[in-house]
Image 1: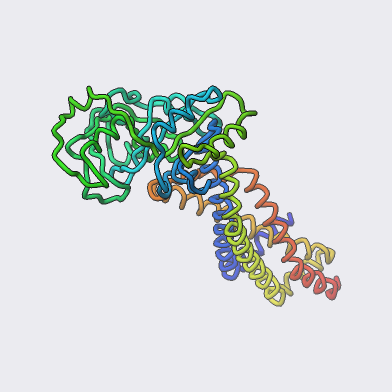
Image 2 (image 1 turned 90 degrees about the vertical axis):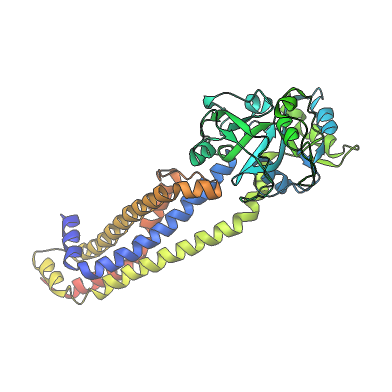
Length: 414
């Protein structure tokens, strides 16, 4: 009965209520959007690699090594000699190793040179292995395996020919078009940078650079593609490599050994520790965004409170009628509180719907430009806590007009 009365009262004052509802909806959209994208971004980063104990690269900061080796962001400071990789990976404490060679691209997508161990040991999320939606892993020198997003956006299928470009710019004038690769496999979507990557063998990387120096082709290649497929192409260097160890207990010992490696300056990092460092760096930005969003919501709540308070003069007759039929003063208090809660709840559903619609429209854009897979589903523990916080804030702010209504009701006798 009280809820119906509150709803009819809001409809009767639909003009001012609509303005308050719009302001509240925008504030909920911003607050929920910041929280959801922050949570999804963390999940995207955290799920990009799993089961990897150490990542080894040239001496640099741990965060830089993590970003370019896992997330394809930035550039390495230097390469690692192949002999260094073989020496470390052949240790009895190492279970498996995945070499990584970066530096080429195709239409803005990164190219990753590696070995078949990448498809056998690399995992993401909760140790989910890579799987193929079509085809198989590379077997020949000029085979290429595409990430799901690359195949989808560029419209490639099995058997298509792909020419790689030197460098990572979207537009390149140094294209290895004389030695194209053939698409032999397409990976299933992972929601990680793997989806935006082209995977070739280390021998393929060597083959296309065999007559190149410092990013420039120095001579016309006398070797044909068939000759290169039969040649023994030994890589001289790689960008980084990932290690899986036989025992987790030995992780810190192996890390110290690699960091003290004398033949070449290299560094080994723990992916989880480097991610924690990343979250620590951006926590200030996260908290600032949340604070601004919360302030916007509080401002909208104050707007609703001001609207309800201003309506007290208009509602004098309504208060008189309620008192005449025997409604006690506290009913007015509860009625105004209920009106504020109804506005907040409706604003939440409208804001959540607007956010879900926006994410559905911008989903492909976020994936292709930022590599972020943002889920449209907004139902989570965080969203439930947020609803509770919004209702609590709305209740507190609505206390002022509610108490004003209570006082007015007490001055009016039956």
